[in-house]
Image 1 (cartoon, helix red, strand yellow):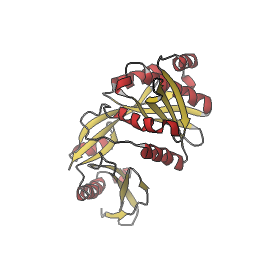
Image 2 (tube, one colour):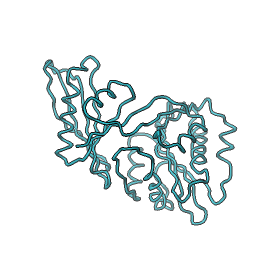
Image 3 (cartoon, one colour):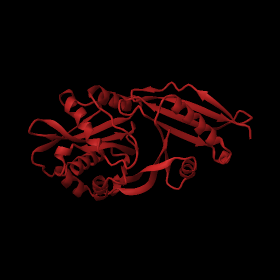
Image 4 (cartoon, helix red, strand yellow):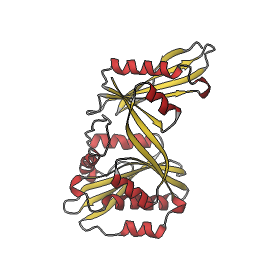
Length: 293
């Protein structure tokens, strides 16, 4: 089969990076596959790129995916990237394709879902209301309030030691400008970012945070983003406390919301335990693959 690969211009520019794209078409000019390459631009992540390849089911095993991957890999090398990442659901065609093309599995992410209709309301309220001496909870929608902006940005380093197995992800240095930009990006696509933080009452600084992105119409499933507690504040149950409050607020604020989605590294035993305790159940497993360039 004759396949033509056409590079495309992706107008999407984001503070975290830029994207390149390719379209695969057959002899009749019908699209049969696509590839997007994300070139990360934040300090600490400029060594890597991420590729997402999609091929029409009927065109698989015809080297469409291989040719798209070749184009993306060449572009990543030309841009000076050290490694290329891709994701695939476990035991899917993409999983087998990446393994056959020299990628190695470096991280396993366990995806789970909380059905809001099935939550134990009394237990949830009890968990959220339980006192934690030396700490209090605060929350907001959208952009972080000015009086918390500096310590909230600093609290993002709580994610730096998150178990990432063998993945060469690097780290991101967050500042006020970048956390504001991230919140703005969520708002620009029509969604709502909810944040719950634990405050150290000794100095009113942010000790930990959890984020939830809710669809703009308040329906369907919301997606948890990061949850982290600074190393110096761990061991006080803050992660479970914040997440319980986030769930409580979601139920109260969005009555038409059906569930909450989250993904956790298989090696992150503390967060997996919190999710299980709060009622999240497994949905699927996603593998992150890495190709060293």
